[in-house]
Length: 113
Length: 110
Image (cartoon, rainbow over the protein chains, first blue to last red):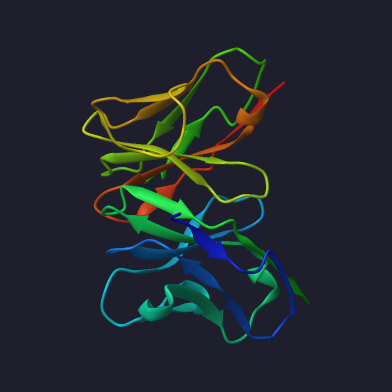
């Protein structure tokens, strides 16, 4: 079945720790990949996206993600997290020219000051 | 420039009733998508509207229907509400590829 899997439900880190959130998808064909963030009380915002080209993409606020086609993965990374990164992070796959966006269940990140 | 707006913010309905949610897209956007986000889950795609037609649909029953108006705004209608329809309903607008999300409408069915 077509799906988007986020491996971690809740991640707790201390400030300055490194972050990696896993995302795997099972769609065949051409897909576009996204990471969205939802800060407490706010709506979903785009962190970064991959359509084609360099598989290492950089987004806002120091986040980056690497597309590994052979592993159907698009993991999110940040070298040093801040307390303000506390939020819910969603991986999403756009199929059929993004007419159909499929989201993972989300990973809640808590950064302790 | 206002982003995506949705109304109402919150709504409480009783089982069996019908509900209409509204969405105004970001300026310049012609495509509107609707999502259902249950508590603790990621958004699930309901359908997408473009040029006043439903272009793509997710795995939702016919009780969920929609409409897009000539000004690109959109409505989501849900008939015969079930307790399981309680969720945050998100609208996203786009032009070409990137989707911008609204704040959502919190629907509670009692």
